Amino acid sequence: MTVKIRFFAQFRELLGSDIITDAPAGTMFTSLITSVARKNPEGYAAIFDKNGAFYEFVILMKNGKRIDIADADKTVIADGDEIAVFPPVAGG
Amino acid sequence: MIAIQTGDVDIGALIAAAKKQGTGAIVVFDGVVRDDEITEMELEAYGDIALQELEKIARDATDQFRLLHVDIIHRIGRLLVGENILIIVVCAGHRPEAYAGSRYIIEEIKKGVPIWKKELTKEGGRWVHGEHMHGKPKTG
Image (cartoon, rainbow over all chains, first blue to last red; front, side):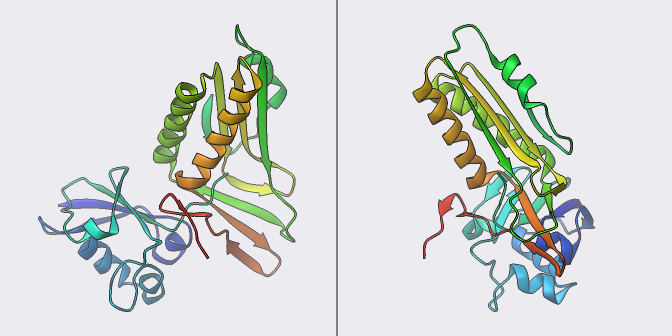
């Protein structure tokens, strides 16, 4: 299946944006982002702590809806999903 | 008008267009690039999602404060010191609703709309830290 991953702000600078990637059916949110982020150690370290868990300030979205970090391990990604990962917002 | 755009807007024209029947008060919020020893500011947004969230904030504010008209224009791209970043025009029958509606909108934007700012300096750049973590004020 094909999934679009979007990083923003400092995460985008480290990992890129609008990443189209193939993933096996049944892939979970956390494992998908882990595998993509591992391509850049600095990017990985910006998002994940030393135990491999999302930092609590990281914001996750699937198809425009926020996903709690606590649920990311069990959130299944489907073909065509748009995933977004970003730092705290600073608009206004 | 609810928009995320690179270009500036004519605030006077927005005010003129906002005067609907029953208007007794218009509050304008204009957030500008502050001179914090920076050369420019660069803003980015999660386009469609940020726009949807601005539209929801405008609807919620309209319902909650009985507003007659709301404009929210958030700019993105590179902006110089003194340029407008965010313009909110709120129109109501009376000033308490207009002030409260305007305040509600700016606080909701800062809380959750996916937009980010990078301050550019002669030495490089630094991302502005958000004031809120997952919709809750930071502590400590």
